[in-house]
Length: 170
Image (cartoon, rainbow, N blue to C red; front, side, top):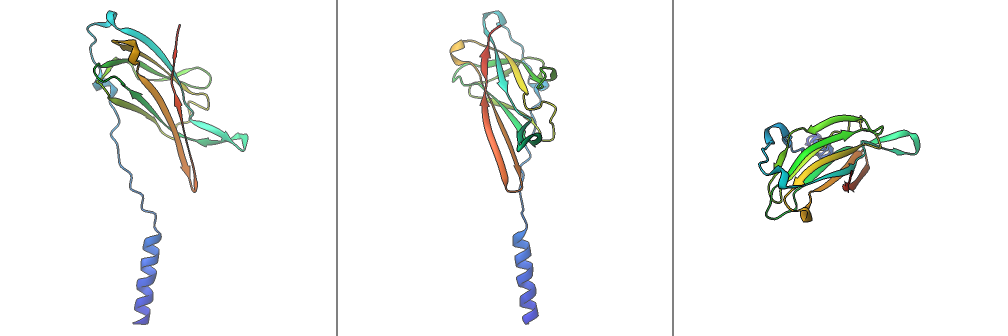
């Protein structure tokens, strides 16, 4: 009986020590299926936004990096009007366009958000990576909001921070 109690105790201790992480799988956005036609294109206000992102940052010294997952958040902050995202181009530290996420206009209804996620393993962008978004809105008082959250956890270490886009003028 004593051995049986010890066995149960050991099983309970070991089973409670297991780190059971539950990961919710989120379906990626298919931007090709979200494309929309813009009938009043010339009447819209057009703009461009620059968003800095970091696929890694340096720590301890310049040859040691900490890789990050990037979540790009594209938000329509209007209560009544749809907005259009015309392009989403991803550039690396050297300024090379390495990826186009949105190649055809997509529409975001009022208060809708879409996201682009770049995995922690994808270090192609580098520490000076950035996005440039082309967009169109009915009224320029409510321009789209572009933010990026960079995050990583490694053992007991966790790191996260946020960047926000700025409008650029050509």
